[in-house]
Length: 69
Image (cartoon, rainbow, N blue to C red):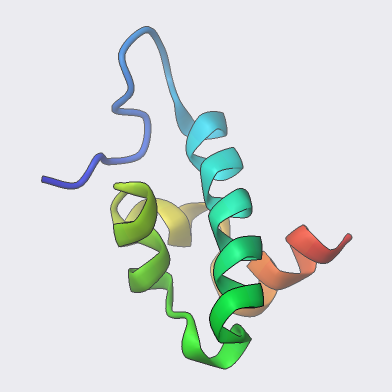
């Protein structure tokens, strides 16, 4: 079952989901290209819910801007 936003033991966990997602996004974007990566693919990769990612970045373009800056 996917880990939801804040579901990590020992606290809120939202920041760690964002950090994991950024690292995975950079890797997936480099391996397969931005257009080929979906938010769902990213959520599966890190074991979080897609909704959790959309709470942090409403669009995939905002995630890209976040990891590029």
